[in-house]
Image 1 (cartoon, rainbow, N blue to C red):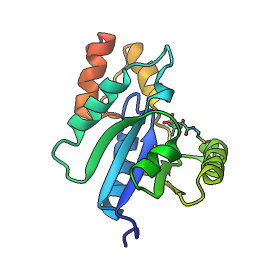
Image 2: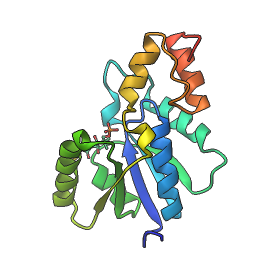
Image 3: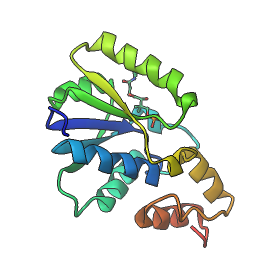
Length: 168
Ligand code: PNS
């Protein structure tokens, strides 16, 4: 089965991209010709951020450099405006657990009131990633823990450089 849409947007902070994100990107790519991984600039200004938006984009590009149909870009402003500017009508968001639901539901309905022609579709990642988040990866890595099971190799190398940790 395929979405009757050639282009979908997968937005997020991606600080950093995890294997949970990767799992969703690959699932979406099986349904659509083109996945735009959209890295939000507004969500990247936290002092606890590990990577700048440019670094995130470069890292994700590195991960998918040999994979056709996956584009990586940053965006600022409203997500729905970005989707419109790229002529995309479908936004994908991952739902790991019920705890994600309330925030995601609010965002989806706000996005719908802002732009009724755009649909938000929720997808579940592989169950082995339901506990995984970028913030936990950052914390574990900053404290010297091994996150090699949770991020792609390119991200692991960048984390090791960022936090000066041998295991990451
Ligand atoms: O990975 P995250 O941090 O959960 O992603 C959240 C993100 C970037 C998708 C959300 O904050 C967003 O869409 N930001 C862009 C600004 C916007 O449109 N805000 C209104 C959302 S209803």
